[in-house]
Amino acid sequence: MELSNRQQEIIKIVKANQPISGTKIADQLHLSRATLRNDFAILTMTGILDARPKVGYFYVGQEVIPLLTDELYQETVGQLMVPPLLIPQTTMIDEAVTQLFMHDVGSLYVTDEQSGLLGVLSRKDLLRATINTTNTQATPVAMIMTRMPNITTTTEDTTVLHAGQRLIAHQVDSLPVVAIDGITVIGKITKSIIMRYFIEVWTALSIIIFWRITKMSAIPIFIISDSIGETARTVIAAVNAQFPASVTLKIQRFPFITDQKTLTPILQDAHQEQAIIVSTLVNHTLQETVTQFCQAKHLTLIDLLSPLTTAISERSQTASLETPGSLRKLDEHYFHRISAMEFAVRYDDGQDPRGLLEADIVLLGVSRTSKTPLSMYLANQNYRVANLPLIPNVPLPKELFKVPAHKIIGLTMPLSTLLKIRQERLATLGLPQTTNYSNMTTVGDELAYANQIFEQLNATTINVADRSIEETASLIQTLI
View 1 (cartoon, rainbow, N blue to C red):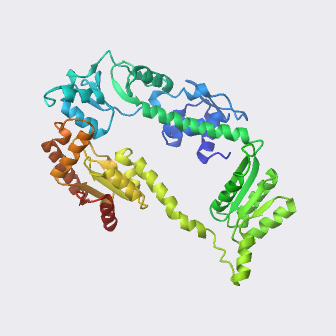
View 2: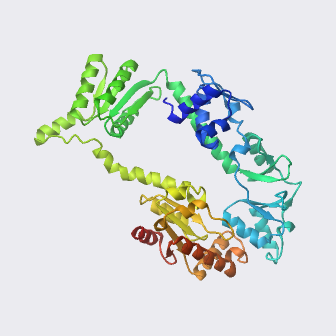
View 3: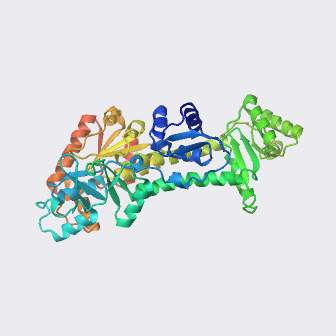
């Protein structure tokens, strides 16, 4: 297994500063601790680094996999928690319902003026209240919330495992994270966050375990290509499928080999490992170098292109173009589209404002103006799209004001249309129509605020009412 440049940099930092905490390593790399989580997992699970609670990382450099199940569970809530949505106890029930849907969260934390926890409101609490309460616009959430001390909380130094056990034991979807005083809310941890963490770490662990198990017995294969080597990879996969699972391959791909200087050390490594060489080089001179080397060193060579190229050239009396990457160019559109779709998911709904500066298109609009489906459709057309909901009284990220105006698209629709869409949304969820989410005055204020932002940013505005996603996307493509 080849370590990434970042993993190699982590090893250098640990060697020079051991013991050193993950947070300090992240600071030196100008990254967050969460970003390096998988790198730390790989380096510890391979035995290159060792980690000790409240001490830090050490360089070990062992060649065995330590049993790191306990270490896997030493990640703390503080590394994974996200900002909570806090509301005062004087908030009315219908406003709480609006906040719940506007921010798409599963629970609201009711606090005092110092962010001290007073109670919790879940979706079930609000649903029950809207059914049983006659006047939700005049009833404060303090009347229906679950109060302290009947609330299960956690702290930022609690392990993820312990927090997950509390979630299961108390049958709740999230836990408020409180400060050392046991009252001040500083974050929240949810089932989905913990699930995502364990999937990421165990995926990395399974890769390492598989690699270590197969390292000694795997047959080494070097793919040498002047393009991406996908042709060779596909052929090898087809051949490998004909063998039982006990036959394993250690495949190393060397793409974009276009000169002798780059090719020579790869061939020397192949000789050292006694690897099978599979080549897809269209350049005759480079392929001849590989052929002669393999003959001299008695290495097995599978030249996938030369025999067929020669046969077609002789039959057609036409010389090959010898242009690397000709087939790959047909697939560039596909790989770019996948990257654009990943971008749209990562920067959907304002999750990370930094994506606004990297986007080809920035979509703005109030709730239910089709920002997310439009983002995904445009991503499928190879555009990197970020979208941001416009909510009155919620500050806009500073990155938005750095985005060129021609990239910003404001999505809007008539008040009557938006009201109908939101009312249908509430009906689908079994909620009453009397909340601010579908209140004519409130929704009108939202649209007015959005129009004000559009003018401030000099954004192009599109009325999405009665337009399909395809029609809106086509219009945006003609405008940018």
